[in-house]
Length: 506
Ligand code: NAD
Image (cartoon, rainbow, N blue to C red):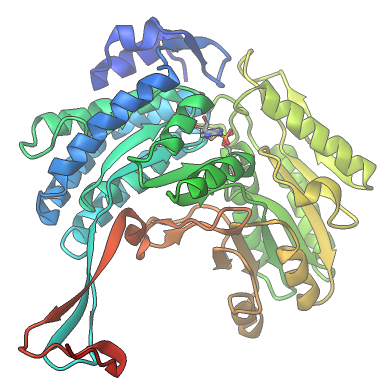
């Protein structure tokens, strides 16, 4: 597919959202597209000290928004979902240009935003509390969920807009305002989403200015958000190194953290696995988004009886997968986000070789791909043991393959890393699959059967254990993290009994 020069393409897309030219052409932060390496915009970033006033606006908005009935707040989110539906193609394309994922995944990311809006609309008529039996006569014991305040959202480059929506759609129906600090690598999609949200605010009478605030800037701006006592909840998505700092700073002021950090996800391929199905799932899990998903499949633990059959087929897939311009419908693997990502990949492959690994692929490509982008052939690495780089997350398309002989051994390998995000097993033996999803099985937040580790739906709670941070976002009852629980004991009688039979007669 041919396109206008990327900068013109981007300017045209941003204009459709109503982002002003000054907002993307006159700033100090240079934005490059990983597709071609070209400069596509220059955005204005704020100073960390400017965050204070912006958070103040969001706090004022919260004070008004919390009084709007929850189903009306749901109507606001429904309208946001409508805007996203109407702008899916343009926003999806902008995601592809700015983050480098293939167009189908760019569109999928926007679909995920629409899906969470739909989910949140239904939720706005729920937000249930419980009523408990009281031990005292003529007493009622119940709980309510109240809006919590300003929710801070810090997001990573690889899901530049969906992560905001997982948090924001829930926060809005829960009665909170949202302050968003996106990745400094992907400010343009954030500007576009902010413009769409402001459009809805402008036509929704009860929505206060400041309900959705965008802070463009680097780590220092994120830290200003984390340190502000008017922000009771911060949802931070990114590396474990970032989460370690953010988690500690929040804990120091008793702020609540939703941490969504790095993964090192594994799939087990058992002797009874449907290998055709497994092959397709493994290919998408390990090479999709050029290995730059938190749920990317990074370790494959294969039973010795099927190892040779599966690995020989995988080698063929790795050698032939189409790599190239993600705006071109033929490519399945787009570019890495930047040079630093390739350096990290190359270093990890060097460490794998030093630890006795055999590397297939992993080389930098220059032919048949746009000049200026960082394109690599995904790497398949046969490892003699789970050592060296295998226990770390390298945010690039590297799949380490290990051999096992007993399921106990496979589960021990699967759990034997510091991260705990996603996992899966390929098996048609239900004793094995149920063991895998049991308390003695995978220790991850996500454990799939006959599927890959990536590509979660919004209906389930999303997140992981250990160094992945323990947060949960999106579906199920993840909304509770965006509200404060209040327990109410109500005496509708004339006596004053005390709990536990305590006597205090005056
Ligand atoms: P990153 O940690 O470099 O940056 C993420 C965000 O944190 C950015 O907005 C950045 O400005 C901000 N930040 C960095 N240091 C900060 C600090 N001290 N205080 C406040 N904010 C700070 O991550 P990245 O390279 O953009 O994304 C890749 C990483 O994100 C991978 O590790 C990936 O696994 C992880 N990730 C996790 C999930 C998940 O849901 N678990 C989803 C997507 C990405």
